[in-house]
Length: 506
Image 1 (cartoon, rainbow, N blue to C red):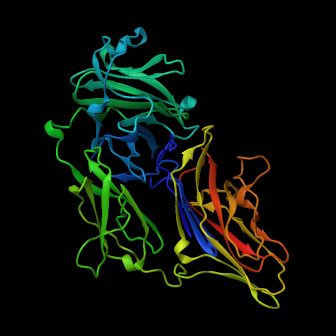
Image 2: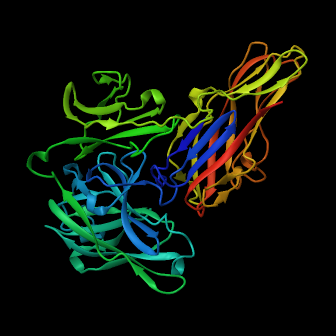
Image 3: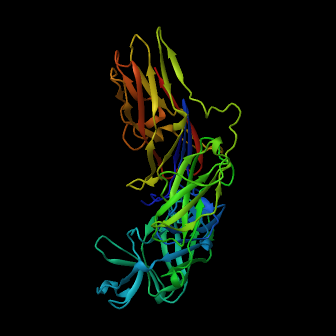
C-alpha cells in the first residue's frame, strides 16, 4: 500500500507546501506504505510553465537558501500538489472584484482619501481573490545571524502606489511596505515564518514590484538575492479579459512505477471563475477520447498500472453546457515492474493452528493512499499530515477459536538515500473496525499518537495494537483500518524517507 502525503499549503499548508518536500515511503509486511510529504524545501517540484495566478493561496515571496545562495521563488498552492515557480514565469492578477474604497477612518489615511477607489488583496483569505504572502519556512535555524533575513521592497514601477500592511487583533494597521513615501522598505523576517498582509494598489494597470532578500550568515559573510521582479496586473489582463487557455500539470516527465499515485491538475490561464471540468482518457487500443465518469473537478487522481501505459488524458472547461477551453494531450508512461516485484500480489502472513489458519492480508488495489497536504500544527512547532491506512483484512478459520491480536510497527524508522533519518514513532494511528463477522467480537486497538505530541506515547516506533479478538470471538473475517497521523519537528531535514511498517497477527 502506498500512502502519499502531499504538502500543498503550509499556512493553513499549512503552510503549505507539492509534490516535493519531505517524502516518506513505508514498506509494510503485507503491504507497502509510501508516504510523500511536501513539508520543506526543496519540496514542491519546480514548474517551468508561465501562468497567471488570480485565485487561491500562494507564497508570492518564497525565500530559499540553496547551495550557498539566497533565492526568491513563488510557491504556487493554487494547484495540488503545489509547485515552486520562478517569479519570471508568474503573473499575479488582482481581479476586478478586489475593488473597494478607503474607509473613513484616520488609521487608514495612508491608503488615500476616504471613499477613493483601491484594489486590495486582503490579509484574510477571500476564496474569490488571490491570497499572496511571504514565506521563510524552508530556511533552517542556525544558518543566519539572529535566525532572520531581511525582506525588502526596493522598487515599484506602475500606474499607482502599492502598500502592504497588516492589522492586529484590534484592527490597528501596521505598514510593512509602501511605495509612495520612498523605497526601499525593509522588514526583518525570522526563519520559519509564514505571513500574509493586505496588498493595496491605487490604480488599475500593470505593476513591476522589485523584492530583495538579504541576510548575514551565522558563520560570517552576507548573501543577497539582488532585486527580483514580480509582475502584478490589477484589473483585466487586457480589454475583454484576454484569451483563456487550459493546461494539465502534475504528469511526471519520466516513467511511473506500477502502483504509483498520479495526480493531474487542470490549470486555467488566466485563472477565472469557471469551475466545471470534464476529464477524458484514451487508452492505447482506443480510437477516441472518452469521458471519465465522475471526474468533473480541477484535479484527477488515479493509480498507474501497466494497462494504462501509453494512455492520453485531456481536460475540458465548461461554461454551462459550452466547452470554453480544452487542454493539450498529456501522456502517461508506466514502467514494467522489476523482476520479482510483488506489486501485483497480496502478501500474507499465515500462522497455522491444529485446524484452520490465521491470515492477515492487504488487497493490491489498496496499496496506494493519497493523504492531504501537510500543515503546520496549531502551535506552529510541527509538520503534520493525516489520512487513512485503508483496509487490512484478518481471517481466522481456526476451529479452536483462540482469539488473535493484529499489530503494526515501524521498527527501523525512516531513512533517505543519503542517510538522513527520523524515528518510526513520529507516525501514529487511531485504529478502527470497518466490518466483522456476526460471531466476532473484534475491538479496535488504542490510539497511538506520534512521538512528542502526547506524553508517554511513542507512535508506531514499537509494536502497537491495531485490533484484538478475545478468546472465542475471533472466528471469521474482519476488516481493520486506521487514521494515520504523521507529526515531525519543524527542523526535520528535507528529503525522501523510506521505512517499513510490519503488520502481524498472532
